[in-house]
Length: 71
Image 1: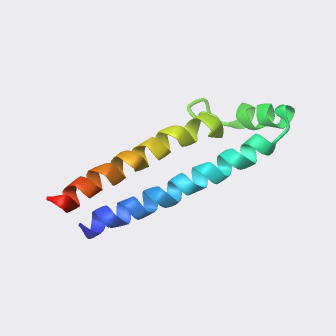
Image 2: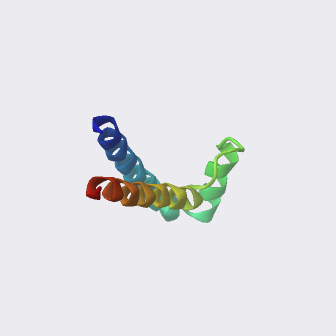
Image 3: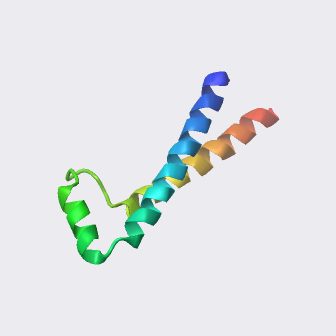
């Protein structure tokens, strides 16, 4: 269980960082956003698109974790 709590903690930190990155990306002028994405590897989505699945994963993990604690 300690490993799961550690994973949840790290996932939460990761989600917070993706949100911070998204906010910084959104503040860039459009030309700079294009430059940033041009230099990114092809498999990397923009920070605006990336943070949604991370937060969804975190919410799912919290729901599952709460269910496990109730049993």
